[in-house]
Length: 476
Image (tube, rainbow, N blue to C red):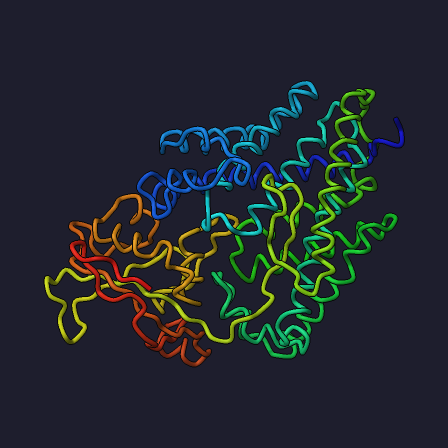
């Protein structure tokens, strides 16, 4: 079956699979450490309440059969164990059928988590991990040569990921078309990183060059993935370099890292890897399985492909409950102003009229203390911090969960305060909790030298009124 395999891509397969295993590991650990406060039995959006109203056909998950916090923890840590084993190369030590089963386990477990995760798991990189994780099952292991069809399917994912992101920009905010979006983006992005302040202060002509280069990389270069080598390798390498630039400029969970992994799978390492190892003949059952999966992906690709051509293009949407073929895209519109929700508590039985006595809760990733330089967390995903960014855009985004969040703070719930960087009430809960909306902007070089502050903030309005446990949570 010479037409079916491409032995020269053995190293590309190995690099891709180890990268996916590493992302799986981060994703499962992130789920294990954060789920109780978010979707646990006493979480802000509990899984039992969700599965009671959403049927299996819409959200297939092991937790549709039974849910408990102990079972979820076991699922997440089991997934982390399998991911670590795959990262260490376990799939190369067992027969082909066993390797495929090992790769299938984290996919099934993470699908079960995502499909009950609700808005906490409503990000494009969740579907991306499931889509590439599913294809990784059929890439085989060191006993057989990489199948050509799956290698092309990986390029199809990368094409949709990049081209979809490029189209959503050109169809969206006018600043992408006049090349000015990066005048604002580094300041208003969901979770800035330690270098974002410096990226923001780059000269504006350079920002315009960045946007223009982004358009080329996302709208023209993806087509080169389907050309002969070495052109396809050059295109993939350029995409990987672009993603590394994005990694330096902000925190976007594992989105950029998975994109790099996909790009690396399209590179021909033959000139540096040497002759491929000797492979056994491809089993007939394996060839049939790969062909069947390819046909399935081709059928499921109809709606995502049609979406790419639509003037009403959707971003980050799944068209099937298994997340097998999805549509991607980000930042169709760019905020010009950054607004942050600052959550505070007071121990005073009656809040003081002069606003003294209120102390702020500090989050791990999102801006709060103006003197604190943002940290690098990606590929780890801080789910609460990301939702707080959405809350700053509009109270409607926070309506389903913010009241429960305030209630947990008033109880000093250990699982909830564990998601925060600083709890100003470590010994006993506050009497009241409130939230206020501020406008944040980066300081200038001069302001940074004079004040030591990375941010300047201005009060905008009340976001959540003072609330205590024995009164109904404020509604919006």
